[in-house]
Amino acid sequence: MKQTFKMFSMVLVILLLSNCKENKEKKKEIAKFQVPVEYYKLDNGLKVILSQDKTSPTAIVAAYYNIGFRIEPRDRTGFAHLFEHMMFQGSKNLGKMEFVKLIQQNGGVLNGSTRFDFTNYFEIVPSHKLETMLWAEADRMRGLDITQENLTNQQGVVKNEVKVNVLNQPYGGFPWLDMPQYANTNWNNAHNFYGDLEDLDAANLEDVASFFKTYYAPNNAAISVVGDFEIEETKAWIEKYFGNIPSAELPAQPDISEPRQEVEKDTIKDDALANKPAIALAYHMPERNTPEYYAMGLLDQILLQGDNGLLKQKLEKEKGYTSDLGGGINYLGNMFNYKGPMLWMYNFTYDTETSKENILTSIDEVMTDVKTNMSQEMIDKAIIKVRSQLYDDLGGFFGLGRADLLCSFALFDDDPDRINYIEDEFKKVTPEIMLKTIDEYLRKTNRTILRVNPLLANNEKTE
Image (cartoon, rainbow, N blue to C red; front, side, top):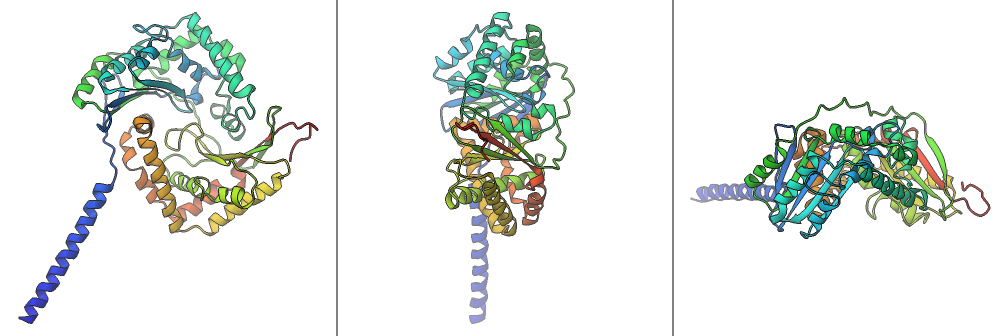
């Protein structure tokens, strides 16, 4: 009897432990955040991503075109950005500025931007206005009101942007516009993508019409709809408004690759409007989606992001050289929404009494320490920071971050579901991969240093 009871007790314990394990696994599964993704393509090549979220009675329509700064025409610097402005100047059924009024008068917000590898437009509206927004986006994809008056007007607007944001601004263009021109060697990555004033003036109606016909075709675009909507109803609207827009013959993509940097670069930019020196350091990134790419994402978290970033601890807390250290991967977005070569970069201002040599010595100490102390524990803590940042991006501004990643992954990878396994890729990174990445990508010969000389009263360059 005692033996039977003992065996029964053992079986009961095993069952309880087994149930406990199953419950933990179930909780783990439930706790994992999963973005709903429905992905398909229209017959004309338009990529469509639907992600339903009924927590708020709003909907986002995001239209992304596979054209950014990198592949704009030579001798037409800033053209991709100029064209972004043209997209708000009227279409077949919506006159000048009527697109903007349509969204705003229905309680929505909108914007557009030009990045390295795409130009995007989005509207966030009450969900009952979703069909109207899809119609409006399709209307301007179908055809713009391309007139000399609209072109001349927007050339003036963009030129004023350049003057206000770059030419007449302390630290104007530093380092987001300047650094790619110094660190890169391929023209596609190294030209002034905001636009030289002469190039902006040189744009003509033929350029605009050709650019629109070539790059603003449905087979060069992706649209995502995120928020409160019915899937089948939305699919029907998308087919109705976008389905018969003709596709275009797309040109061959230029070679946008960068050669391996073999020598450290060090450059000074004079700035009569700056009141103190500044420095930026940039390193070429590994190719997207490689193990080293994800390792660099973790190194960004370890070295730079948050108050516990090792560079912040050294340069701000310990040395007191600065109080405004900032940076990351892709100053015009995040580490996921680009396609071609990219820089990991950081910058800060500092006092004239602080020498460049002391700054670089402190930075080199941090780089040595991170390699010496690399461990799985360090990686695990960085993954927590990555997860936190990713969830902030996905949920921020009514889910616009979600729409952005869905369109980016559709355009660049033909796989918007990547949004659901980003974190898994970071978890594959080992200490060995981290050390390999440090050796190859954080070496001094992969580094570009750009300093701002504030042209002080005595006209001496700060060192």
